[in-house]
Image 1 (tube, rainbow, N blue to C red):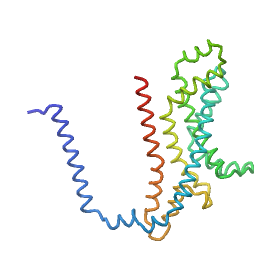
Image 2 (image 1 turned 120 degrees about the vertical axis):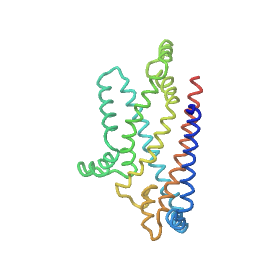
Image 3 (image 1 turned 135 degrees about the vertical axis):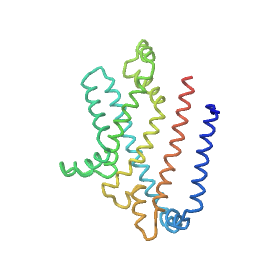
Image 4 (image 1 turned 90 degrees about the vertical axis):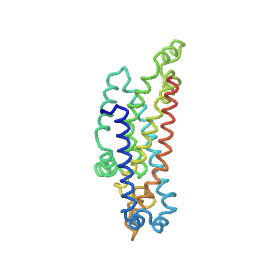
Length: 263
């Protein structure tokens, strides 16, 4: 007798749950827990990471992210307005910038600002300025498209109503259109902060003093200590989660609020 669609779905779920439970049981009984504990949860190695991983590495990661986002959001807004301009030259320049920085790896931009520009022009930036410019300029290209979508999502009647009241175009954009656009794009902007937090790890390529370490560099150096195992990387990953998990929750709340507003 042929099974119904519901019966097939129930059988499929039962098989999947069974395979999952079997995998868990096999892992519990056959895993070398002593070796895993020594590799991932070495308490002596973990103790050596504190408090520097918080007061130094986590703090620097937050600073790098904040500086990059500041440049990204400022540049992204300018690029979004240029992309929507009635002047063709501005649109072409914005499109060229966005396509270029979205097309090249952020790693290449870091190398250009960290080594290429100082070698070619003799201009040497502070590490914080280097990260701010390199990561911020890449972020601006992505944020520009997000903001442009938000600006275009604001009903045109809002701008037309403001103009009919005698408000200049620039003032209507600043006081009416742009604030509404930011509300619309808050979820993707929050996700962009998460990406910037993780991309800040690229700064290790530039060669850092101990006081400039971020989480990835700190964890990478930590695993070179005797008997450290992977514990320093586990702690560094946990510190990243301290930043990214709340931001992810915040992004989902923004999405839910936006969905309720549309209804």
